[in-house]
Amino acid sequence: MSQRVLCLLIAVGLLFPAYVLAGTPDEGAKAARQFRIHDWTRPQPPIVDPGTPSTPQQPGKPPADAVILFDGRDVSNWRAMDGGPAKWVIKDGVMESVKGSGYVRTLQAFGDCQLHVEWATPVNVEGKSQGRGNSGVFLMNTYEVQVLDSFDNQTYPDGQASAVYGQYPPQINASRGPGVWQTYDIIFHRPRFDEEGKAAQPGHITVLHNGVLTQDHVEILGPTTWMNRPPYRLHADKLPLALQDHGNPVRFRNIWVRELPARPAAERDKDKEIFLGSAALEPFVGEYRGEGTPVITITRNQDQLLATFAGNPARPIYARSENNFFSKAIGIEFEFQRGANGQVESVIIKHGDDRIGPARKQTR
Image (cartoon, rainbow, N blue to C red; front, side, top):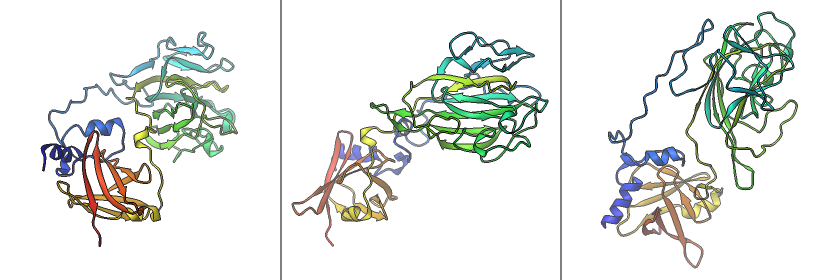
């Protein structure tokens, strides 16, 4: 076996499974494959003081790497939607919406983020359904997590507290009573748009309401609006966060955000996947052997091909075209070749500029 082929086999994890890390084809997985498992030379994560948790009685301390949006002192990080001064009031260390003053938005723009918001509806209960303690937290000024007094207050499920408004009700109602401070911890990944301005990858959102999971990485269907579900509209990679004035004096405190590392667009050419049914996949099934290559066994589980190398665990491979497949787990490609009669005869394994094979399909 040549040194080049040996290095390729090690690189793709065929001879040493400890190098193989399963995962999706994103930058994190690619970075992970640069290191062996439990590799002490791998860069250490930065140390961040995590702060302290909040209670209904007092706000906690934000993480050391958070961007502080409101700490109880002023609204210097907030503006009216037209860019003018924010008209909400500050008193006793909290920011309170003023009826008719309009939404407020952050001065800074954000994309993927971890957002912490603390809020309280009025102590004195007035109104019912959507007219009781109504506000909202808008990611990118477009995607709303509903704020509402949902304690013993019936309304439409996709409009109660911690709903993705008009799209997903919360898994449970974790609301505290009127006037009691509550928390949202939101993990948001923005949608990705292609060169034509179409949504190549939808946004996703996770919400913990008072520390309890209420939205579990749900797929955002588009902008959130009342009585409508419009499609995605092209927008910038970063936009301000916003808080809603819905006519009720809802209070806010201890608002902070952590920007998350950017994820790559999902629809990169080399990772695009097409669907081939079981009939189209069956001709690839078999055992492949070649000089200097491991034994490659291709099997099928309904509409999914699986590749096994020299007795290692079977791993799914995905079609990029009718004759080209790729592994999401170990970053290699399979280029199948057909003879003049159209039958599959061999396969070449590729990893970057390196290749091994062809390994020829064995006849039964």
